[in-house]
Length: 181
Image (cartoon, rainbow, N blue to C red; front, side):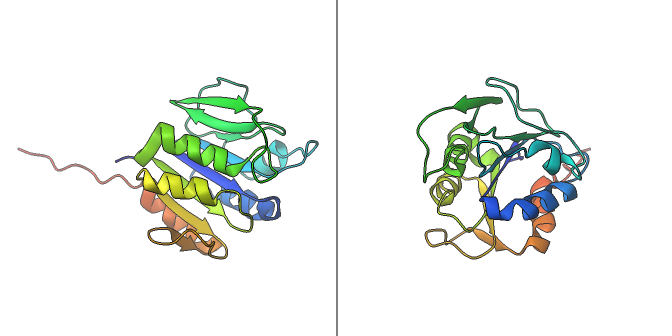
């Protein structure tokens, strides 16, 4: 199945790693990226994260379309969810003490995109573990960056930061079909 959405979740302590990841994304990325980075209510993140990114990093409005080649960053104070090609902003209660929460995004991606979503979780916080497991159960490709998290075994790739590019390359590679004479 071809990739339709890349979801990325990270605790605040991984902000520099997320910025480095965004800078290395392919300029012609054919899928939208939905990103939750734990943040405080006054943290301005879109501009710093977009500095090195080859395409826009935006804080979407509710019901905006998910656009390929764009990073949709969860605004402060809202859960970022995805639903059939659109963004949904939610003010449901915080999860694991966080809003935006990584689990909320990953679970919505699992429900809406299933096997056509890929999830990348920067470890170091309990938020994201349940969502990544749910995405994996729905057939999505999943990986973690950082220390292995309890509850994420069997089929979850554990990557060093330098290995993320190769993982994305494998996901985005679409083999050409054979021409039948």
